Image (cartoon, rainbow, N blue to C red; front, side, top):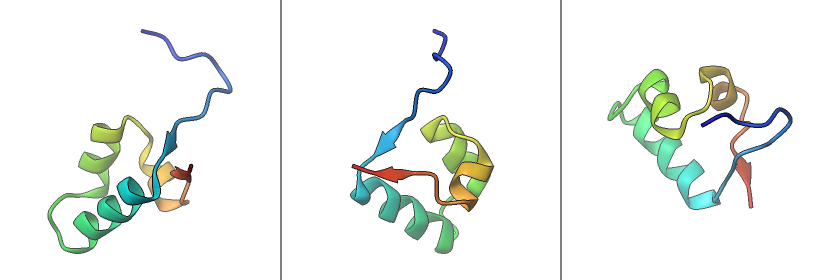
Length: 52
């Protein structure tokens, strides 16, 4: 499945907060979280997980 260019993935605030908590608590790494959410590591670092 190919993603159209310019298309953004939008994540709820709950998903964003849980992802940050998991990373901070050491439950997962940024790399594993980015793979699970199918976004780049840089998207997580730069806060590109957009709130709905």
